[in-house]
Image (cartoon, rainbow, N blue to C red; front, side):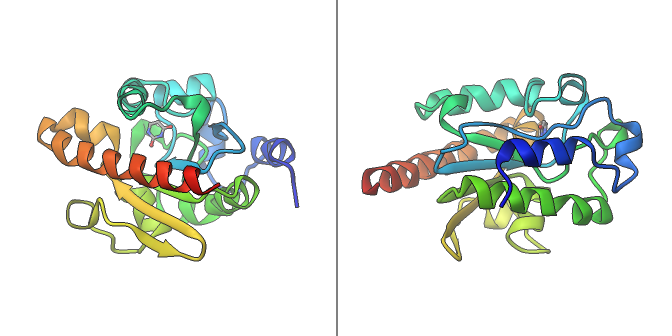
Length: 187
Ligand code: URA
């Protein structure tokens, strides 16, 4: 079993897929390694690629605000992505790119061992919950997989594009906080 630091060194050297040729930085993920909750996005955007950190652009600003609204901070959670390198022009990552990168996420999950995994958006949900996941239809539902409680909600970028999604997203995050409180009171 690798430590998270050892895994990060490996991922930072990765050249398994063509995204490695166009990236500025690998965005491995960051946060509380002991956390009971892990958020998974799609992949780095422009700002994340420049800084090597997840969710630091406009989506990240909104994500921080949402966390604050449920009384959490980045220090309380761990944040990672399905792909660790930026897809050019912020296109969705291709199936093959997700397939070659998701092994790294599996390792991160093994090491961090969260109780809760939240998929931010359809790309994460389709790679983690179900291939044909419909985010508008199945967001907000808790899925029991092995020892994990998994839910998908809207990606912050989708909320920024369509304010009408805010209300449903807020319901999801309240449910996420309830699950987080429940699990942390059991520990
Ligand atoms: N969008 C994502 O899915 N992940 C990031 O890290 C930033 C934006």
